[in-house]
Length: 167
Length: 201
Image 1 (tube, rainbow over the protein chains, first blue to last red):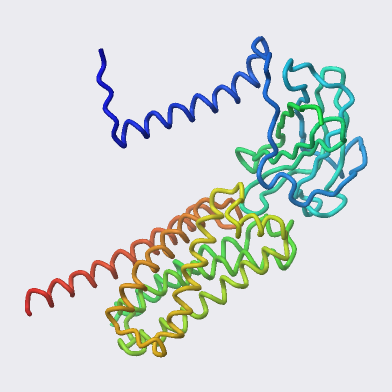
Image 2 (image 1 turned 60 degrees about the horizontal axis):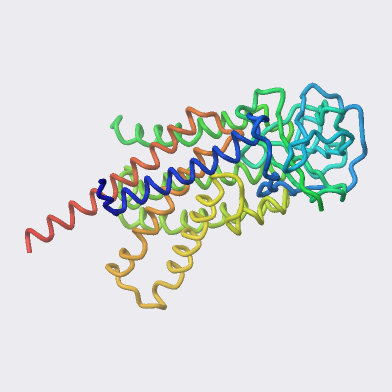
């Protein structure tokens, strides 16, 4: 038999493992293993995600002059089914305007596979991080605000994925 | 004769180069004037955090100990003012992001360090103003000020290094390294003086 010694290091390791497993379970199984999508957990809003949100951004072919691609997927919590025709609002601080300015905002709809893709101006670092904002706020499902961060300010695309639960 | 100005030249370069490089950043083209002012106020605050240990440690030639201490106090006030301008400018630029930072709920990892440094700076500045009225003796004052100074330095450096903004990476890291080195040096010298006093008594 094993003797379990409880000390601070063990607890830290155990805590870390639990945390890591939790992160892997929600992150990896949710996004990378559709075969195990049953019981897919809904996406939580990210902290700061709703900052500088303007309700009701218009559906556009492209925000401003474009050059940068924001893309992602929208799926249903539980069975992970792709959700078509969902309106996703997108905004960011770009080369063409600050986050709160109307011209920095736009919206697009998901296709039949639950995918969306909107061209927008290049995102640049604001408040210390190059990041974008996305919102699902149409009422049928619970509102979700995302705030993905680019790995580098030089990147010309960014992804964000929604798993929505009924409102 | 050549040596004293050299340290001053090094200090001017340590502060001037990162600020000059930031002034040439392409990011500035996409920022409003208030945001730009807020950013530079932050950089100047970091530069003042470098000057403070140099002044109080008496490492800047040409300044008497008395004048060094006086300058340390005035620069402390200027540091608090620079932080106020930094925070106010960021607040005007994006109120919700600044509120997240001040309430320690920001998604950016550098924000809690910056806000912690801010409170430590304000605490030291307030206590320095009230020091005589509170009748704080040098010993008591140091017990309060030195730990807070360490918090200010460590948190400011972490805050600055984690930010992706207008500062150029290498000059920023060099400035931060000098801030740490100057602080470690002044604390080590204080320690040594105390040990000397202890052994001679």
